[in-house]
Length: 175
Image (cartoon, rainbow, N blue to C red):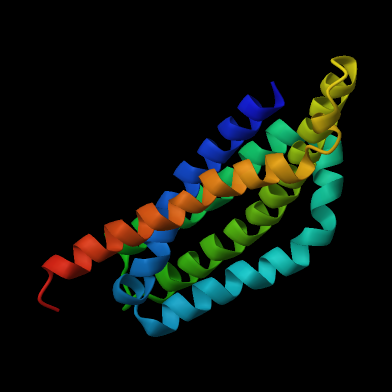
């Protein structure tokens, strides 16, 4: 049903963004202030530049494949961060640039992911409205707001989890 699909979509976003929120909270500590700022700037610059193109990607590959590509963008930053810590650190120029590149890839992936999410919710709402009309239920005429609310309620819990993880970490460290 559209509500189950929306809840499943919210759960996917919950897990992806629980991890990403935690990384964002730690970025200043683990990268240092300059690299953290450069990485976040790259994310938002790439998102802005790729957003107008994301609808074409979704039209070409479909929502599911596009969302998978979008999630891989988040994995690119995690991979770049792992390489940064294993082989470079802040003393090696290429490892810092790799983190910024990972942020750029994340920005492109995020633009695709969020555009596909919006399209899926609208498709689910349209399907819910069709099912409501077939069952002659007057309260199912407009499902977009209800499904968006369900998605965002589940998704926003990721901020609570990421914040709680960061709080517990920083609460136990004397620094």
